[in-house]
Image (cartoon, rainbow, N blue to C red; front, side, top):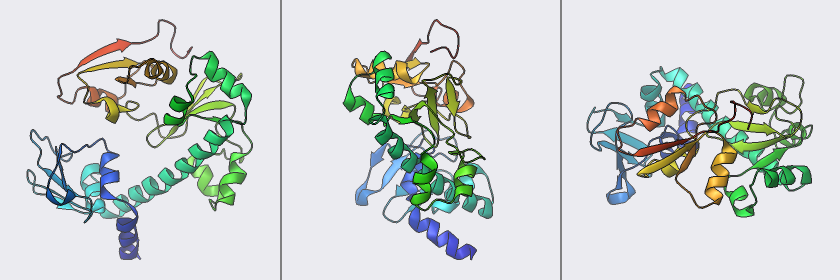
Length: 272
């Protein structure tokens, strides 16, 4: 059973997708479509990590370790085989689920004028940018039925946190921004303004798009980022609050020479 499960995961999960999901990016492409980059398994100063997306295998010429996506999860997270299997199953399943949730909320955005009006009031008016950021709207009381019609069982939806233990939408009357492995909802009603699904906010928003820029603008909230992108500043990332977590600090202090401009709000935290 374990061997069959491992083989299924190896087929389902592209190694490149999973490794890039851990903030790795290739430095150069070599023969056969293979990729080279800094090794995420040890402190690396020159690209020694080889990834073959066609064979779904990796090898590091620096630390001498290699294997498939399961072996990478073992080494990267420092867990045994069985736990790596569970990590990958959750990563693959939740990623698929959240993708369906995001698509559903994107459709709902255009069905609820109050959500579009709210975006306009916050200065976000370009339909192309709203589509690019995959912004949606959670009206409430309709997500559960839709997801169950797609085949997701209710206990799984509750475990993933997209619906409450009572079966209601976790995010209700909120503008929804998709993150890497999570969702953020900004209330447009009387509820608490900010809410994430279980799992935390993760790294800096859109980091892979800006990490190579010599100058980066770091803002507090998504609307700050969106409005600046709309104004023609693509080199903006967002900390999702005034407090940076360990992942975000590691991203900013990755050894790459860059200038970071802090552009946080003057109001109190959480009021935007």
